[in-house]
Length: 354
Image (spheres, rainbow, N blue to C red):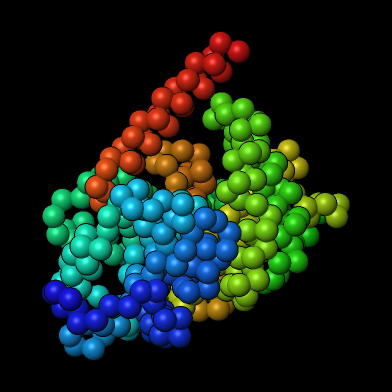
């Protein structure tokens, strides 16, 4: 192999992959072998991860899957699929260089006959941005990250805005009760809330409820959430807030090393909103992350300027811009983007006429 690499194995050996992840302090739960197994079990994907050995004997792993039904020139490799978080490289002891990324980019270009999509750990974005020849396409992303390095007392006093502290106190004074679990036990309650949220989001976006239900059932089934909890074990914690014994809000938080990632959230808005259940759940999850020695709490991706982004900012989260990088032989993603934009405009017209 060219560049600084002397060997590549695909799929990456699970034991070696886990050793590399545990040695890299910047690694996220999304970059673990357990997470990739969940992706392959929940969707039409097969393991296409790659392990590289560098000339100076460092081991690097690129978590990646291939869509099962797209062979030959239509083949699609993803690091990682939409809805499954960020991929990119995990490096032994966190030692990753620009030369490493260039060599991996060259390997991906050489072995691809279709499309390759890399959505890297935002901390590595600057390395992927200049990795070799121009990309076929890039898509801008924004993640919001909260620094926990000073401990929860400082986070509460100096990073949470006063509006969040008031909201949390209001939630604590209400009749809300909160339960957490690191297995699949609470997932059914969470999923019922998630289905309600899917319909609310669809209404906001002008998407028919039937389409939203079909899409959610196909991409975000209860079995998917339960299997994630089973495979990730203690690294996946579900928090559920109840009012009068009924679940009204929930969040799912993943952890790996010093990184905590808020992955999914859902609520029954009419019940959870007035008592500020979501504020309380994030406050508890953030405190729990601090107690367990986490250094960062990622609120996940948001669109700049939206109400969701402002909600996350109120906790003191910083906005970090990065990109998704695409190389393709045929313009599949460009065509898909055009089709989605046309469909969205069509739905907006139908909604206005209604």
